[in-house]
Structures are given as structure tokens and as C-alpha cells.
Length: 137
Image 1 (cartoon, rainbow, N blue to C red):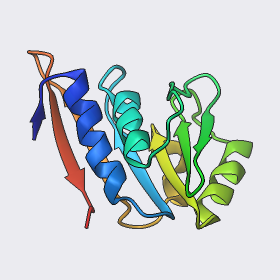
Image 2: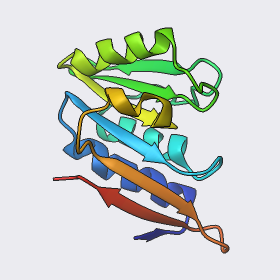
Image 3: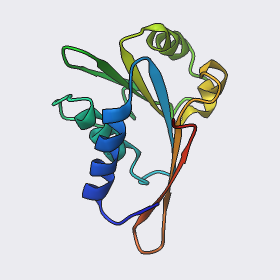
């Protein structure tokens, strides 16, 4: 699938968010600037979370919630060893009311459920994004 704009990436994320049922973990894969946080904005919108979604690159994780679900957004980009954040992630994964979105999940791969949904975003020369989805129902 090819998406040509930031808005189309948000809209696509919204459609995904509408289908997600907690507990679930979605891994986002892509280079810096590929649109992982932009996609997460759409997922949050689909979950009916109205908060402004920002990158957790410096805080490692951010939490957003509404009355029915909590979205926990992790970014392990700066962590070759997640340390104590792996405990935080394990708690989120065990909570039945949480949708977890992970960017740069290589360092916590051993904690993630087998066959979890994964979305790969590849930036093309024309600025569009190629989207590859794995393990979605």
C-alpha cells in the first residue's frame, strides 16, 4: 500500500485504531522520519483518544487514555538495553485495557508476543510511504 501524504497516514492509522481491541501490541518499524508517530496519531484517533500525540523519543514512553482504553506509546530508539523500561513494558503488555504501540522495538523483541501486529513504513524517493502490514487479523 502506498500513502502519499501525512493526512493519509493519519487516516490509515485511524482505520487501524478502530479495529484494535486491548490488549494488543503493535510494532512500528521504519527509519527516522518514516511516519511512525504520525501513524500513532491516527491510531489514537481511531481509539477515540483526543490528546495530542507526540513522539516519546526523549521520554521513552507516553500514556494517553479515554474512558475505555489506554494507549501506551514507546520509543526505544535511544536504548540498546531497555533496562527498567522493560519492566514498564511488561506491565503494559499484561494490562488487558492497554493498546501498546512500540517504535524501535529490537531491544525488547524478546518481551513481545509472538505474531504481534507489525507495520513497516518505508519512505520512497517521491516522499510517499510504502506500508507493509504483518500479522493483522
